[in-house]
Amino acid sequence: MEICIKQDENILTKFLIYRDLRTKGYVVKDGFGFGSDFRVYERGTFGEKGSRYIIFGFDEGKQEKIHKLQKKIDQIILMGKEPIIAVIERRGEIIYYKISKIDFMTNTAAMDLKLVL
Image (cartoon, rainbow, N blue to C red; front, side, top):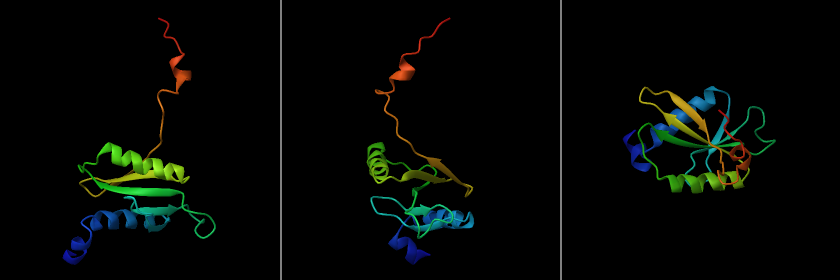
């Protein structure tokens, strides 16, 4: 384990996410780079279609600069993939958060509503 941690300090986080996804029946491959950990294929589509999800793994309490994460998310969306953040809690549970983009300046439909009391 010490040898693996010298190569990649996040290897245990990656292993726990990999194992969780595999037990749920997903096909998991290495990420594309730019900080992603895994490409994940929908069940039954490996070899027929490209991966649908790109997974980023984080331990609970780990900090990440938001502009760096935003750049990664933008690249993934441009590729037509869905970005997902996998957070490992202190107890070892993994929670997956699907990331989507919203532009508040162009969301005028909600802004046109008037509050009537």
